[in-house]
Amino acid sequence: MADVSNAPGTQPLAPGKAGLGVTQRQDPWWAEWVGVAAGLGLLFGYAGVAAFLGKGQWGPYLSPFYSPHFMQLHTGKPWIPVALVPLIVIIGFRATCYYYRKSYYRAFFADPPACAVGEARENYEGETKFPFIIQNAHRYFMILASFFLIFLWWDAIGALFPHLLSKHMGAPDTESLPFVNLAFGSILMLTNVVLLTGYTFGCHSLRHLVGGKNDCMSCAPSLQAGWKAASGFNAKHMQWAWASLISVCLTDLYIRLSGMGLLTFEPWKVFK
Image (cartoon, rainbow, N blue to C red; front, side, top):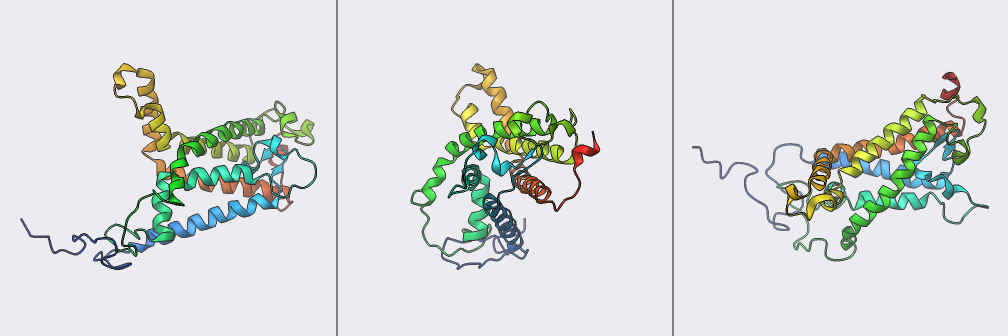
C-alpha cells in the first residue's frame, strides 16, 4: 500500500498554529464560504430592511415578515416597526440553527475557514461565553417559530380561499376575488410555508424533543414514528434551510412590489 502520510492535505492543522488560511488543500476551498457569506448577507440584509419598509400586504396576500395580521392592527405609527417581532423570531431561530452556525462561523468569522485550513484563534472555548452562549436558546426560538408557522399556514389558506378568511385578512374588494384563488401569489405563499415547515420539522432540537430522550424506541411507537419523520427532514436540513430562506424573501418581494404598483397585473382577476 502506498504511503500517503505526507500527501497534501493529510496533515492535521492545530488551531492557531498554522496561521489563518494556511492549508495544503489544492481545491478552491474558499469558494463555499464566499458564496455563503454573499447569500446570507444579501438575504438577511433584505429581511432587515423589509421590516422597516411597510407595504407588507396586497389584496389577500400578506408578507411572511408581517404575519400574523393582528399585529398590524394599530393606531398611529409605532416607534419600532411591528414587523420586527416576527423578524426577531426568524433571525433568532436561524442564527442559532446548527446548520447556520457552521455556515456563518466559517463565512463571517473564518472559524475555521474550511476543513484542514488554518484559523486565527489559538484557544477553543466552544459556546460557553457571551455572545455564543445564546446559541443554547435555539430550542426556545424553535418553539416560537413553530407558533408563527401556524399563522403562516393560516395566511396561505386565506390567499387560496380569500372569501373564507377575508375578514381576517382585511382584503379590499373581496367580491372581485374567486372562491379558489389559484394564482401566482397564493401558490408562492403556499410554497413558502411548505418549505418553512420542512425546515422547522427537520430542526435538530425538534428531533431531540420528539424522541431524543427516549431510550426505548420500540416501547413508544408514536414517538418513534415522529422521530423518524423528523430525521427524514433533518437529512436535507441544509437544502430546506436555503430554500425556505430564499422563498421568504421572494414572497415578501412579490407582495411588496405588487402593493407599490410596480407589478401592474392582479393574478386573482385573471382566474375569476
